[in-house]
Length: 409
Image 1 (cartoon, rainbow, N blue to C red):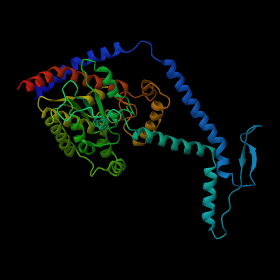
Image 2: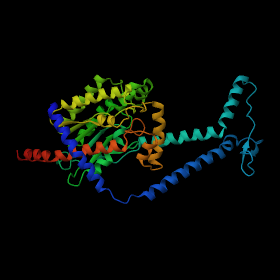
Image 3: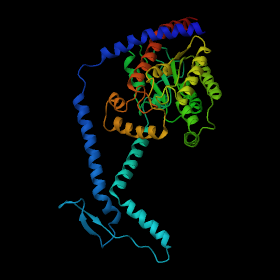
Image 4: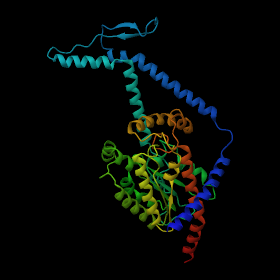
C-alpha cells in the first residue's frame, strides 16, 4: 500500500505542474484592473463616508430628545463645523447615587464619536460576515438534487459530479476559492459538474452527518478536507465551547475519534462507488515549531494512513506538507484566536466589499501559506485545485472502461 500510494502521489505531482501551466496560459492577458481599481476606490470612499456620518450624527442620535442642547465647534478652530452638546440626563430621585453616576459615565462614554465609529463598524462587520456565512449557494449538493440533475438510476460516469467536501476552507467565501479554480481547470473533455459541499464552521462530526446527501448525488470523485476546526477546538477551550454550542457537536474530537470518523466517511464514499481523495488539513498558524502545527502534523499522518488503508480507489493529497514548506524557518506567527478573528473580519471586507487581490492581502500581513493564519492563500488554493484536477482527469479513462465493462455484463 505504501509503495502504491507513493507511486500515485508521484504520478499526481507530475501532472500538477502541467495543470497549473494550462491554467496560466488559459487566463486572458488583459485583466480587468480598471474595474477592480474603481471598485476598491468606491468601497473605501463608502467606508470613509460611513465614518464621517457616524462622527457627525452620533451625538444628535443619542441626545435628540433634549431641548436644552447647545451647539459647539466640533474641533478646535473649526468655525463652520459644529455638533450638539447636551447635559447629562438626570434619573429619578429614588435611584441610588452610585447607579446614577455609573449610568452618566456610560452615557458620556456612548456619546464619544470614536466609540460610535467602533461600535457601528463592529455591527456592520458582524452583519457582513453573517450574510456571507449563511448565504445559500447554487453549487451545493442540496441544490444539485433539488434541480433534479441526477436521475434515480446510476448516472453516467461522464456526467457524475465531482464533489468537494469540507469546511470553510472548501466553501471558499472567506478565503481563496480553490473549488472555483478547479472548475476552470477541468476542461470540457472532463464534462463534469463540480459541487461545493463545504460548510463554514463545521468539524468532522458535522461532515459525517451529511455524507448521505453527498452520496445521493452519485459522485464519481470526492475530496474530503476536514479537521482544521477540530484542531482549533482542541487548541482553545473557548473555541471548543463555540463549536459545541453553535456547531452542535456532541464532543471535541481527539486524534483517535478523528481517525475513526474519517475512516467511516471514507468507507461510505467508497461503498457508493466514488473515488476518494483524503486531504490533510493545512497548517494552523505560521509558526513552524508551534504546538498547533505539531498537532496538525499528527493529523496529516492520520489522514495519510487512512487513505493508505482505503485501497486503490482512495488517495492522499499532502496539503499540510505543501503549506508547511511555505512557512518561514523562524519568526512565523503562531495561531492566535483574537488576531485570526480580526483578520477574518477585515478579509471579509477585502473580498466582498473592496474586491482586493488576495496576494496583496497576504503580502501586507507578511504571511506565506495562509490569509489569516487559517484559510488558504492563493498559491496553496491553486495547488490543491491542480491536484484535484489531475486526480479527476487521470482516472476518468479507467472509470469509463469500468462503466463499459459493467454495461456489457
